[in-house]
Image (tube, rainbow, N blue to C red; front, side, top):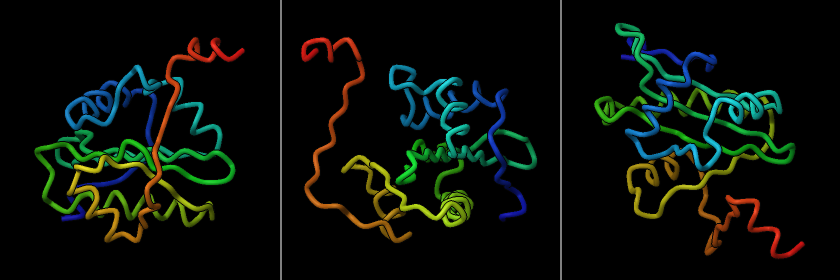
Length: 149
């Protein structure tokens, strides 16, 4: 089955299809900085964006966005198109992601919703360890920082 699908690097003209994939799978949102500019910036900073395609249709059916903060890698927007879920394609995409991660030589971290049992099982089986009772917080609107300046 692997020969029916292939992993490749993201290209600028992939963004519209990737954005639709993220909308279908619920992993992306332009309000979170999920745009072309941010993708290109993170790639230029040592990250990678991997696309999974169906060889027959050339359709983008998966994404794995890896960012690099110089200390650690972060796995984001790991998604498989709903009509291709259950075919173990996540393993193919994760394997390609791990090749990059191993080559860079930094730890890798990810966030996954506590109710996403399929993703939790995938990541646990791939060797990710739960960090405990960490709470994750974010400031999306930088104007909110003005209260403290």
